[in-house]
Image (cartoon, rainbow, N blue to C red; front, top):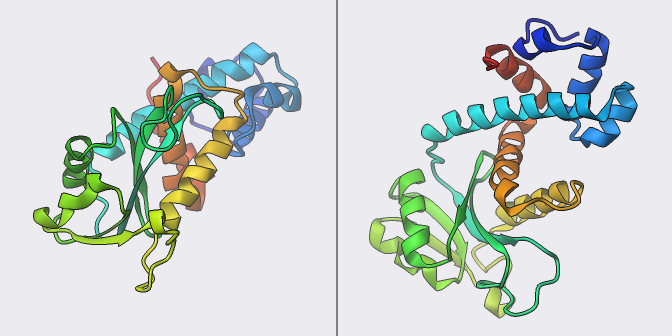
Length: 228
């Protein structure tokens, strides 16, 4: 049973139903499916999902203020948007939103929507979140070429030459797996508005970073969350 959680004080449903809604959220079941499982109105499941997500956004933004990922970081970008878009492919793909991701191996991930994949966009984020001297793994994109100048130990994997693990064993499989997981997760929502993508990405980031004990961490976070 879940008790002493602030948002339950506003509940007009039984504690048992709220617990079911909470468990469905933890399992990342959609609000529509949850309403059927918990036997509540869709508006009810939407309301509690929204409140839980507001708490996650608040918590994730606070965690980002202390974000320093440490050593051994994989860096990559990925495009989010319609599956098929006419025009350019790859970096510069038309109509899609570009997201940069930084993943500490066996640790946390940090993601941010960016305007483009230029050195001017990429390096300030890296310098803010990764200490100088750290090992950084990227593909061969030119936007990362100046990393060594700023004191990073830059290890490249040349995807352009069909290299996915180089002779030294370097790779960026971790961050690429994160992109795949995030896109599969977002696909269940049948399309995400561009204006809402940042929040969905932030929730994905929080879920990933708390993956070892998501239910416990979410429960503790909700106990501290102040409902407006």
